[in-house]
Image (cartoon, rainbow, N blue to C red; front, side, top):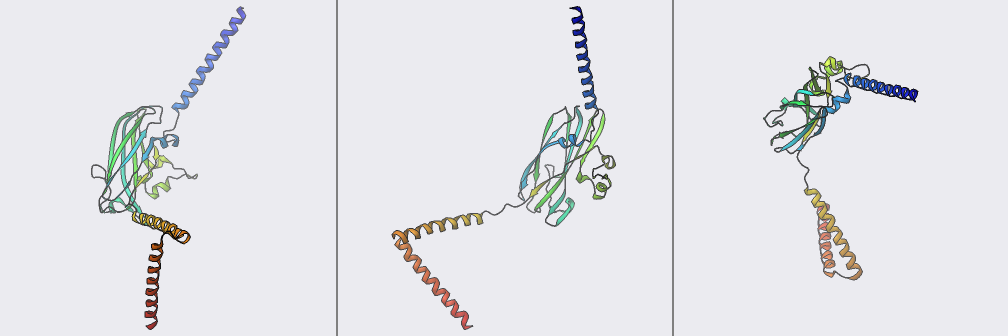
Length: 259
């Protein structure tokens, strides 16, 4: 019996030792993560909803930030900037656009400051995008910048729009990945876009619907008239206008022949 108890104690000690070792390994895995790992950076902007705006009106742009890291993000600053315009074959900097869209403060730039985001916490941001009657229709690109402190280290994340083509190409590795160190940042955020466009006119659709409906009704009425003589007046009206059309066509043919 005593021997059995000793074996039981040894087994329990072994189980506890393995559990502690496993916990230690997991803790090291969490603490050794890369800040710039796309697994994390792709979650920093958790959700984004961009508007389609009619010139002269305004729309709401919403962004949800998320802390995907296991530690708290402190002194968070999020910047957003409308920087580029595209339409068909036209591409130009926002500074060359007449009456460009702006945010609440009448600027194409906006900055939000957040004290902190705990691990897994999200923060919802809303922006009112104002356009004008003369705002050019097209697609407007937005770039982002995120600054924060993590484990007492300052981190800076930027989207593609903050870099020239030369800077971006120079930072590419042989495997077509981006060396963020060459760009002087901690990670890469996605860009985004929104549209300014006049709505498609609805009257052609309504007109087509009316023509289709009238054609359908007339088809049924002509069938009923031919089959059961249900609409004698319709047949007389149709014959009258058919003869008028023939007279008109005959007159036009004679006029053109005499020329």
